[in-house]
Amino acid sequence: MLVAAMLFFAATGHAGGLVSPPQVVHASWYGGGEKLNAKTSTGERFNPSDRTCAHRTLPFGTRIEVSYHGRSTIVRVNDRGPAAWTGRALDLSRAAANDIGLIAAGSADIIIRILK
Image (cartoon, rainbow, N blue to C red; front, side, top):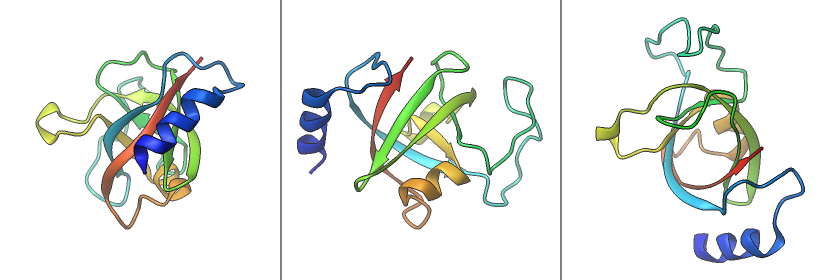
C-alpha cells in the first residue's frame, strides 16, 4: 500500500514546490500530556495545537507534507528529535497526528514529502 502511494505521489508531484521525492519514515507524536520542555529547540513555546514536528537534521522552518492512510497535513520543523535509538525519524505535534489519524496508533510508518 505504501509503495503504491509513493509511486502515485512521485508521478503526480506537488504544486507547493516539492524538494524531495516521497519517503516512508517511522513517526510518532508528542504533546499528549507527557512531561515536555516548555520551549522547542527554536526557542518558541511548544504548542500541541500547532502543526509542527521534531526532526534530527532538517533545517528549522522546513515544511513537510505528512500522509497516513490517505490523510495528510503540512507541518513545520521547529524542534529536534526524536532520539536516534527510538528508530523514529519524526515526532509530530498532537494536532498534526490528529489530522492524519495517527493518535490511536501512537507510531507508524508514514509518507513524508519535503516542501519548500
